[in-house]
Length: 522
Image (cartoon, rainbow, N blue to C red; front, side, top):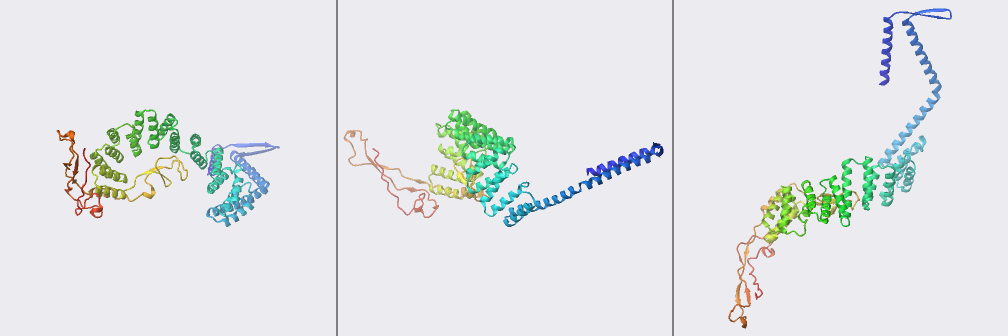
């Protein structure tokens, strides 16, 4: 395109020049060797242009003839190189497809057309073919040879790392990854592997320094780097909590500055503040995270922040959490649990049922069963809530690579992956939640009535010979035995499971009431 534009500009310039000369006619006289030559300016200009063109054509012809041997040699060399690269490309595709025979054939052809010292991909093709054929020693030798060449060092280290990881040689894989990181910190696989190895060994300071190098090398973007650094600071704070609570507090607060709703960092920061007896700061940290991310562990830590609080005081703290995040299932459950501990059964039941309407879960049904047991003791209603809990959606937990942990961990114990734990329902416990709200309504509607029973007041009789000589005048000191009257059942509810004798919450009307003997009052 540029050449075409240059040619057009040159033609326009020549046309403009000849038109300018045609508008200004004149004569040109040349006296040379006794001869007088006269011509017009237009003819003279045409002659000059033709002379320049002739000189350029002659120079091009001479140059072409002079350089023709080299051009011919370069043409055949390029043709051979193209055939070699075509064979190399076909071999790499065959190796990727798992065709070791074709890969070996193309490797031999490429070696015949290309020089192995000038094209390192031939070694890569041979190594891939050796891996397909199961020749691990040969592949490792080729990768080692590539790692010694500055041009293919990164490729060789990558191959050695993958091979060591596949064989389970974790120490060798770690050394290869660290070598690659030292020589090329911009490699994502090497930086990630080295970071995970340092985290698995608890070397948090080294991991943080490596993360800073990755950020400078632009291996990770800002959001990813902030997330990983928050995890590293939280893990470091967890290790320092017992021995160095002040340092643990600073690291946890630093993690919260990077991720404002990071629950593990908030819990560690609150514990560190409590070690310093700073209740206000601990409460403030938990409240800020609660506003962004309501979490049951935050609620439990906040309600039980002071060990000497009574059940009523804990209920007030739970109600404060509800005020910070109203109309939230976790807020309602926190208040319900605290109300149950404070024996305010009405409030506990109403909050639990409100949470059930918003988000049915196994935890809500179990809480309702606890409330039922503490308030009424009706076994039929308790079993009703327990059966509903079995059918309800399961509760979330800290899960990483299929492993469920009671607490958050920075590294997965299964794969060693950093920041693998998530707060979610375990995969093997995920059920059908499409009609969970309808099932919750049915569970509340089908709740059996409370079975009410009354026992007659015990009759006090004076045992023969129970009067003491010293109480003859007052006749007040007696020994009594209580003979309770048979129980009168106001309402017999239909049995919830099986026959009435199998249900401890419902008395069999055909069975005579048992006589209970009370101990003497005095």
